[in-house]
Amino acid sequence: KGRHQRPQLGSRRRAMEIDPLVVISVAIVLLTIVFFAMRSGPAAKKRPTAKFLDKSRQTLTLGERINISHDTVRFRFVLPDATPVLGLPVGKHFKLYAPNPKGSVEGEWNGRADPEAELQEIERKYTPTTSDDEIGFVDLVIKVYKGGGEKFVDGGKMSQHMDSLKVGDTMTISGPWGMNEYLGKGRFKVGAKEMKASRVGMMAGGTGITPMLQVLASMLKDSSDPTEISLLYANQTQDDILVHDMLESLAARYPTRFKVWYTLDRPPSGWQYSSGFITEEMITERLPPPAEDTLILMCGPPPMIKFACQANLEKLGYAAHTRVAF
Image (cartoon, rainbow, N blue to C red; front, side, top):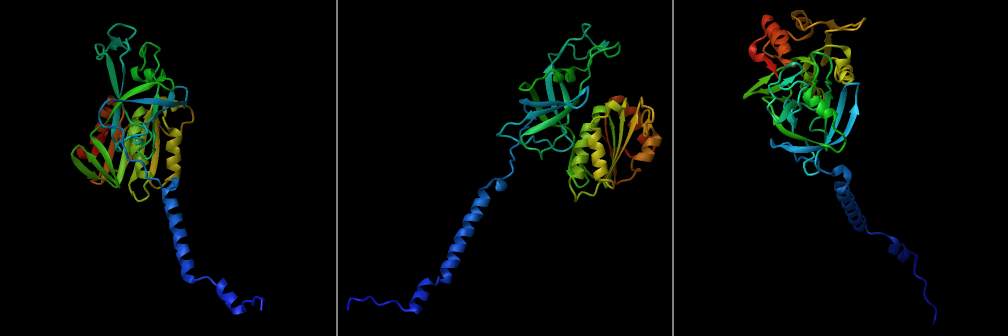
């Protein structure tokens, strides 16, 4: 009477079986947890969009400086956490401000009358080598013009001020400024007019390479942008060629879309490119020919733009509306 009956085998099996609906419900819960975990993880964080530049005067702190060569420095300025995107449209520039230094001769700078002699502050226009794709910082490559010799006794005002900066120092900045903007896929806004180009020729002199670099880098990193680019870059010496390695790297990476050619006032022996000022022959050989779908961009010292670029382009038949000076 006191014996316990052993459960039958069939009932034990039924007790061990799991209801398929329970399995499905658990799977749904687990997948939901994984989905929301991935959404809230680092990879799912939204890209910051708050822009720093708003045309007012603001300050940026120098976070790093690296000497690229004996007279060229890359400055990295830190953007605020609240506005980590610079907010500079491609083709535009910003302004930097600094105290106005006194020349070695009162009222003069580099042996000439100084038009800024009465100003307390100077401003200069710059284009960074980074874009809005970089978050939290902006890079600026500056060639430092130090004083020395009879013709350049005082040097460059802004470049020497920046060369004096130490990490932690600040600069006053405003922007964006400028009349030209690259809208993507060959479309440009020049003033109030929008233009389209399938081939873009660029002529740059010295530090005038920076806006050209900004535009061509934007074109090349977009695989759906079919624009072809040719750059003619003029400098005094081989050491003066800014971002040379970057240009060569881009030319090697995009051989069918980007070509670069150099000319130097004082070339070294064995120089394989051109020498002297930009000429009609250089433009004919190295830049796209005149056409409605060709646009020529220029940036450099005013004499170069007037005599070497605009004058030669006009002789070769490039229409005025297809020549854009930055």
